[in-house]
Length: 334
Image 1 (cartoon, rainbow, N blue to C red):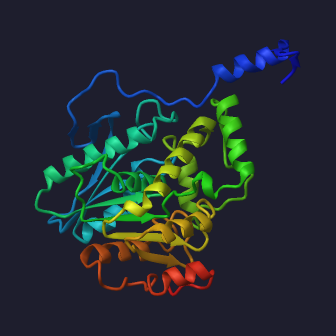
Image 2 (cartoon, rainbow, N blue to C red; image 1 turned 120 degrees about the vertical axis):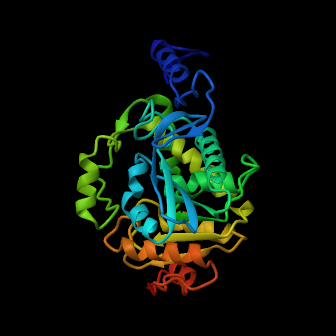
């Protein structure tokens, strides 16, 4: 900033105007409140009307409400949910506010909006299946939303039988380098509307190339992300990590040895702070997108087994010594 005496010069004044005019944008909620509801293919909640997908079991022994990851949408669960339906598990999934077929897709609506939708959707699913245990399943960002809800008092009526978190997004600022933190702040405050991609970073989210190619061709999957949306999901991950000590629900946490999206360090911090002792499954061949990797059916089977009996070992054995293998960086027994 250029200063003349104690007053900014022309360039400094321009920078001040730019700084005060810019900043992370959080989209407001719907202008008018509507009655929450679950339709055949639509969920109406605090974030407005969104597409809803349901994979119904003939005689469900369990019901799951599934939350997708960042830049994804509810179709993320198409393959596992169809498999679970054959195992007696009904799955509900909706496009979270700001993603998929939701209005203002690509704009960040804030942690509170994401959690409020979860609270309402879970209540509606419980009301539809009052005699069937409800579980919450979160993939990446969806896992962070569930952690915020489960570790706080924002959903007083939320009483799930347990939670399943696949590569939960817990890479908060405290586990980021100062360089990343500074770059994120500058980008969100100086150019919040600039869109970035992951091209050129050399990150492999999954070993399932056919699936990744399908996502690249899917118009509902966000390919270019606003910088302020990245800032927003880091806010969410901050809060998810802070809520960990208060999570007391039966929990199954899944993590892949080749996850390049959520680094090991914040995941280790999460496990160290989790006084509730979750069941932790560590997949030697797993990537970030565990539910869609080439070995995905192994993970689906583990989840179905845990829903049947949370005390029994997982069929894959990924939970046997999982925490120790992950903490020591050694091989998994999956």
